[in-house]
Length: 342
Image (tube, rainbow, N blue to C red; front, side):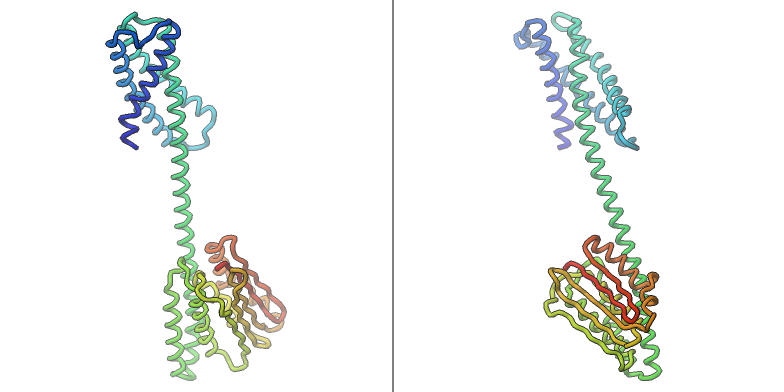
């Protein structure tokens, strides 16, 4: 493509201009240029082709310079000034060469030749410049949009990593608290808890930008629930149901855990927790509810909590406009519902 533009297009462009000038001149004079002495035609064609290279180069160079300098909307004044400069530069070059050529061939320089030289070639040049300028602007805008999208994606990825880095300490703090209290009461049980914790941390090494099967995420939740159950007393009423239809469907990892963790963290009052995961019209519906002490729902729903706030932001980045997340606090219970496509 570059070779065509550099070597083959200019002579074709020059021949097109030459034929147009000769046809107009012949209509005015009633002659036929192909019936002239072939030497005159050869001189004119050769000169026109040779001239086409610097003219095309001049317009391309000027176009690239103006595109680099673009800094704002393309106003009418800017277009008029730019096209006026192109017309002036190319017309001066055309007059110097073509008028000299006309003056030294067959019947010499005529006023009609001057008019044709200053009318037809500049018109072709402006059309060429307008087309290439428009194509260059479209290409530049496309490249800028690609660059903006890349920067945006990089920013989103950085933010996701930051949110995940916030989440890990939050999870570890709660888990290590459990191990700490178990070590004082039951060392073998604390050892089992550490083993379970290592399994959970191994799962968290999965790249949060790549999806995993839902069944793997649910198995992770089961391990987490077993870990939390060890630090809860026997009065906790725990009801967990995972739809058997949930299997190989894909979901981003570590989105469900904050809801379950929040329930274990703030469970009180009647001391029950319910966890439900079901397949509903091509989406994963995940519901978590827990009892709270009377008047304690406001505390569990506090907007500044790390877990739920990070979850809201991750959902906005991973499922923009394609998820549903509801938090429903009450006087004696607290419910959260998450629906995401799978």
